Length: 80
Length: 411
Image: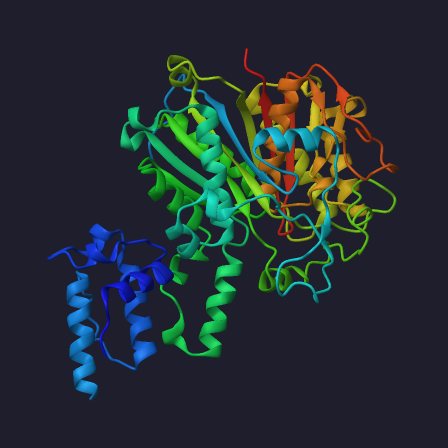
């Protein structure tokens, strides 16, 4: 399973109501806070990804989209 | 608690209205002045089959236009209304937010039921799919305090913030809290209330109120002070205001629209309408005392006007108890007969109408009501021209709160 920046941007828009440029998500080191997504928004993203793809993403909140994508990919690998 | 600083007086410098009969003070006043009734069928999704047939719905409000995307997703309709009303009030006050110290602006709102529509959606997720499908914003969106918090966050207002949950009359209590906040040293408070009780879950909660009117004819569903009074019609919306210390307002050249001169509140128990007579009279006396206002100085009364014979009688008697002979002569009006009662938003909408009435020297009429079966000078039919220096706004809640507010025209 591959989660793209575009898909993540769409999820952020749907779950937190925040419009982000997919290219900004890919900027190295950029945090969710800089994108305007608060911790509740990140929680919502995690729940949506877990529900949609049957993943377990752990209880640690990722600080950046890059961390979230790493967690998703690692969890997806485990699931295979 | 900070001491009250001598010499500080709270004045109202901005009005923002989101009411069933108008979005923005101008449209609202035009409809109110004309006595237009906007009561109609409840058309919100899921409400069509419920026994409540008539309500005051806000129309002409575009949430996507009024608030940013994140607030559309993260907050309930009642907060959308409050945020939009706060924007209108701030704009009206011409308050330059940039020039304000961050701790100089506080926020106070009152709420009667919180975010029922948002809450229902998430609870349906909970029971339909499971706890992991409940969105995290549920934790804040349906909370009574949501509007205060979100207005504060959105505007960067870091002054004292509060939420008053004291029943319908809490709208007036919120204004009183804002006045106290100003007297304790905060220069500016964004204050008011807006409600959105017209979602299925919220409507079902209200069906248990014996005072709720289930009449089907919008012209007869809410007829306060009339022999056909059969309960009240609920509504959504409300109003927000900017309240400031008078000297700060004068210094920045703000237009002072009214002085918040006096307030008092009492409690007489849920649905105990006969007992509300003494409680409301006591609140009126307290508000007059704080305002140093003689009963015969009151030029107009914006009544609570519940629309139930026993409650209407209690209000008329309370006015007679507190105002004495003057109660026979003072004009009384209840514009909410044409919009419905927006719970905590109702006395806020009345406060907006009272300020506009004083400015325009015009008492708006009580829509739909033609016959009056009480001893009071109820303004019906058309607006009445009158020199208005001082207005009295009354509010009672179904759970037993009573409050009175005295407003004065600035001099």
